[in-house]
Amino acid sequence: SRQTCRKAHNTLEPAECSAISVPRHQQVLPDMKTLLFVDVDGILNVAVRDPGCAPAVFSDENLKLARQMVGQGNPLADRISSVADRNIAAFQEEGTYEKFVSDPGSLCDLLVGRLARLIEAKGRCSRIILASFWRRPQHVERRRLLESRLTAHLGRPFSFDDHTSFREETGAACRISTIGDYIEDYCQRQQGSHKRKLRVLVVDDFGVTALRGLTCEGKTPIDSVVDAERYLLSRAGDGTGVLVRIIHTFEEFTAENGMQVSIGCGLRLDHLNRALQFLDKGLFDENVSENEFSKEHEDAKFCGIWANSCIALTGGLPFFSRFMR
Image (tube, rainbow, N blue to C red; front, top):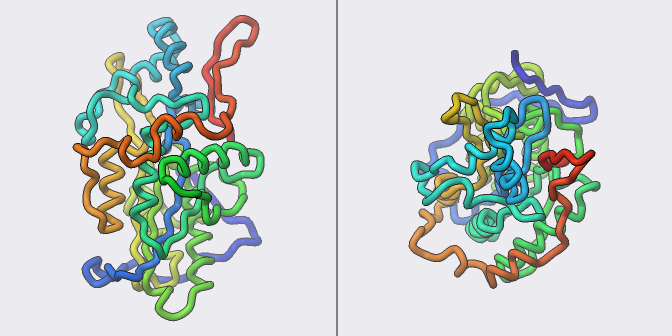
């Protein structure tokens, strides 16, 4: 069955338009504006899907707990352990996903540094938009933590330029639609040539969800990343002069024990390089230490206000910390 998202009555109706974009070689303009939509969970950390429950945090604490419980009939422990052991050499990375374990602030500093590289590459005519659940008022301290960590990596003050609306999101289709609302509103506000020179980059795991079997606005089927890109393009007026790229940080695989595992896999190098190519910035040089980009690696790791995402104990029984919505 399809996951469907319908708009609230007070939002704009999608424009009737063609989803055909102008060829890329005709659109790369020096003054092109960029909208960069950023999710957090599954991008700046790894999120492990636990069917029927909120995704689990791939943190050092959760991994230690999973190692203790693996093979004891706890599916989540087995999933977390299999994620830690999964080799990611096929994705331009060295080692396994264990390198992406998050700290007590639910962030992986390595991945935050990569987002900082992307922010630096997006150009001066751009807007960085927070599309994550972290945009909501109840998560203001988490947002401030993230902004402080990015400030440390960038070596200059950073804050998000904007966020998507606070509309209720019940799944991946709703997240796509919410981003579409923002694009449509932005394009309607622009006049003349500005509207015809727009580049949209979305970095999102869509709640640890595969882009298939979805429906936006009750009528637009989404069965691939390309379908989602076409839908977002359709929200940008007639789509002329607009480029859309989605970096879907999602992976699903079969563990050694036969269990299906789905994760928001974080901003891996293959994803970062696809995003940089879209921005015409070339490939990230793996031979350059990522620490050289940050103002000071240790400062970036420990600055800001830590959010509480540690493992808790209830009745003496441990449970895995999960992402808050």
